[in-house]
Length: 105
Image (cartoon, rainbow, N blue to C red; front, side, top):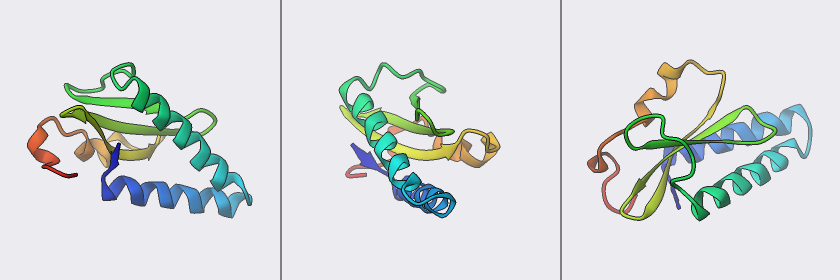
């Protein structure tokens, strides 16, 4: 599983946001993200498509959604977004061509 740099930055931002709210909550967020990503890794096709190639996976207990594509038998996480954000904010991560991600991303 590969996280795009933008997705990694979003994970970091959410972690620090939750840690500011309550110490340890950021770690719980990361644990839930890890649980969700393990599920995706085990069965990437199980999560619903939200576009031609882009899947989504919800995080339990947190209002976040992970967006990912399956490209050449690998999972590429393209975004980790708060579910209440305007879809325009994350729509550029819903890419539908393999060339968008390129080799090694």
